[in-house]
Length: 235
Image (cartoon, rainbow, N blue to C red; front, side, top):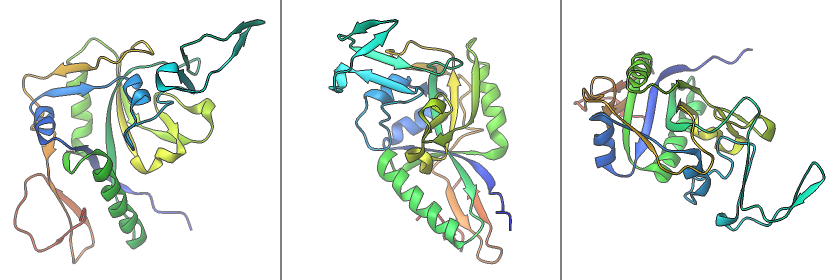
């Protein structure tokens, strides 16, 4: 029997600092560089090969490597980044794609994943309902002349596939949906910050209530907390 496809509910972004959550909904769209993640040591955030097949940095105390290019031996490289021929580094803004579970096993897996994401990224969340993802993309695109692309990240253990929208299989639990903006140098660490004067409060909602209807079993996301007799799916 073919597995039932999950119904997308929207995008979730986790924050340890509530002021950064409020900054986002107020209009500050912060985009880190791949190198930020390559240099990080934080669990869940760190990815030594973010957006590339291979990266080597003496600044990370990586084991020394020797390269041979066209017969010439290079032993003193301090930084190496290898991308797919059709790819390169771009500024990144990342979300967790929230899908409605189809059964109790998927519900338990989702609950466990949310617990892990909160441990790694923070307890405060921003939520974009699925119908507002496209309007959010259009608004972001209007803020810059740089090319803006967005979509789901895939996961693979094949390093030749790693790039802007493909990560190692060990990150699959993050179920990432990514905005990629423009291009940046492999060693760039300064973020790109886009400011929207009208803000995002009509598209992005802070700390919503995610509930399961006891009668239908359907999950609902309420942008504003309110009294309800259903149970909280994220607890």
